[in-house]
Image: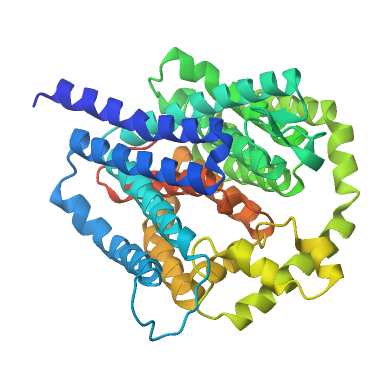
Length: 431
């Protein structure tokens, strides 16, 4: 295969996962058993296509083998609870009709991670893939605005309920939407930083326009969702990405006026965005203490379930066990409509118990270490931005349902795989 043919196949492969994720976000973030199962099937097929296009070398598979093996063990743990026969651990997982769908959903997420890593392993693959995600995220934002203008109380005809007064984009949860647009802002800043003159990044004109637009529009959209955690995490991520950019600091010493004007323009743009939505944001922050108390009650409720079920309740068993655990009218009034523990660790424990949590944390550590080390050594803005975007997701998932929504779990897998592939490969493929 010629070099141009290989590059063309890489570019095609690099846009496949972003397009799949775009479809999921447009379809209510694939939130629901049927949508999630369908999305997972598409993810698996898309991964097969990506692997056929990029044909990762044996080195790729050797480097990915340790975390992939741990993720495989986690899949076996989940699947073993759905198999017929005697369960020696007496897990007693409930909702067996939903267990298989949960396992397929998990496999789909792992498939996305593998596909993203395989693309990022190829020269230029990570950049094309992240550029594609920035572009489709802007389309998601435009579609969300159009839907909100047409009917602020519904998305695709589905009632938003008590969230009718908040902007939710193309999905039904405002806090998750805030996370989505916060990620857009962070990646937009990272891409913008690669366009600084001394980096000499030959970016196409559309992405040169899209990067600053993504930064400012992402912040504004995140703010109007009125998601406090997403907005706070996004602003912190943007600040850290700017402060720790080595190239920006060097230019600040050598071309002070240029950098000051650049940062001032960005700061003014951010300030204008926040000013325009000031009432929405301030009203939400005034209820932090009340909502905080309610959130701790939710955590305490699901914490009691975790203590009673150390092996978890199985994929898809959360709603059933929640109804069984309602022991008073007070619990029923507070919890009946809650379909998530609003905390990532509690979610993992409820799905598969302590073994599942330990396996996922081990795999995360194996994937994170190369990226963190590379970020510390090479100090490249898109790696930092992608890691920061993952940080935004984790911050949101610590107090909300973000990673319980299938499309967002897949988005996290996409970012993790992209960062891992771009960090581990030599020479680096990200700038």
